[in-house]
Image (cartoon, rainbow, N blue to C red; front, side):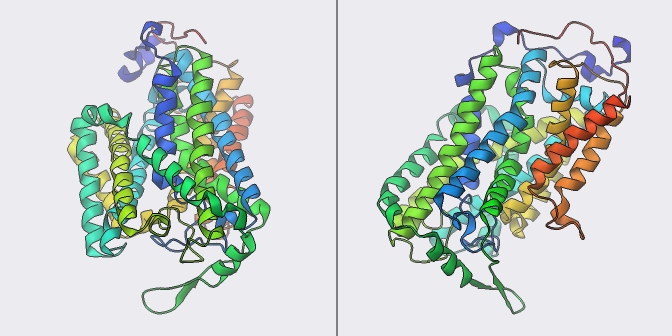
Length: 482
């Protein structure tokens, strides 16, 4: 049977148990660094931006429209979904097999299909992350000079940022990795600093006043006319928006749990790494962002009563000069994540497109990221994360179904393109991307989670119907201690 395996599968070697490391030296600190990235937490109080680069939510009052309690509840629910639905199974699959995602994925999508899904898709979507990173890093770096999105200065900075990160991803990621462990301490310290500066205003925070201010927000657009906020969300709407934003942001990182799990020693490492690095870090970073914005408005610190973006309020909280320094520090701390995104993309393209010069393939991906950043499309973070969630929601769902159907273990590679995996992904992606499809807009609640559920259920149904391709035997046993 092993002769039926393509070389990239047959030659794969599991990480030996002797080389595994504790959860606090790998999984937890890496995931915590992702959730402490300012691009994630500074828009948690907004949920969805009115216009890319603006500090206003699409909805009056943003995710604070129903008060801090509802917002924090939605944040906790989203964090639980990220850990238990999107991360744990990939982490366990990595632990048991000792193999990376693009090998483990051959069980769900087949040895032919797995070459593209999830390996190539993971690499492709990393350029979406690079675009978002470049856009917001450009915003912070240009803010002290009064140059925002749409200006030449922002376009130049965002372009150079993307090119530098892509270059490091191709050539010098090992140097960035040496300092990446410590740079997440920068946003952690800044969050605590902002919290202590605004905590006194929490007692005066009133959600109704924030909603009223949001209802008066108007933004002039090119060609005439204005953009206005929509009505405030209900409690369920707030929870749903937070889950959409946070789960969409996390989706690819959840599937990458395979690559973290393959370096863990046991199941306890997998769980603790996620509980600390994902669950706790998400609640910490997102929760502080909510408290900071609420405290700034409750204490009368915020000069713009409708602004909800945490980084945009920093000049009111700390003063313009101090805020400029903090913005630059946040941008510096965001550079390693940009490099890691480029590094993952480069590895994916090198594996799936071995005959194409990586400078060309990665160069084209970087060009797309630059276009998204310069045009401002990457500034609609919730839109980008919704697409990412639509792409990887069904992947995580199908992998979870395959894992459970196989007796809580990796089933091994399957021949060709596994129909159960591919059909579940196509349907799941349509469901997850419903807000971008005419006629389906607004009809699918929490699209990234809905995509996961559809991918899971459909895979189970199709597998039970016999629509799984033949299992292939690996050259040697791949199972390890669980």
